[in-house]
Amino acid sequence: MIKILSRFFGGLFKRKNNLKIGFYGPPNAGKTSLANLLCKDWTGEELGTVSEVPHETREVQFKEKVEIEHNGKKMLLKIVDTPGIATKIDYEDFIEYGIAKQEAKKRAKEATQGIIEAIKWLDDMDAVIIVLDATENPYSQVNLTIIGNLLARKIPVLIVANKMDLRKANVKKIEAAFPEYSVVGISAKKATNMDNFYDEIFKLTKRV
Image (cartoon, rainbow, N blue to C red; front, side):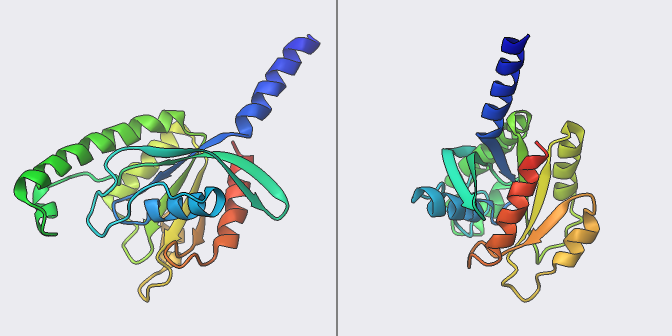
């Protein structure tokens, strides 16, 4: 009996010390910017490429063994950055950014496949950080789709209201839209309010 309990609790603590944290959200909300910020701070290396062109991230990418430390506490994470979730992807959206038609069609196909892959990865996540653009309407079909998938899976969630450095940013709207979740406002671009973000990360992992 002692050996059984030892194996059980040993596996439990091992799992909790290497949590898989997924970054989800609509395109251009700042998922990769935030993931890059964490990885750069704690590993010295960024995770992915950031661009103003939608769906720059078109496949799941991750960084293993990212150890973060905050207020004397340490935690080991696997950070998983996912493609922006969208209900519709049109290759003409890429053409508007000066991308050639053939390349635009290729990107649209890759982005669609990436979204399917991202949804599948939800089954492997210990917790999820939803990154939203705080200047946009939170009551979008995309956001509701993401939240619905997470509610169905009962995955612990933290919502990040990003781009708080912009004048139109409104964290209160996001809090009102999703009152069942903790919301923290940050600017990944300027690395502001990150102390509160890390506070919420450690609270989130306690629920895993």
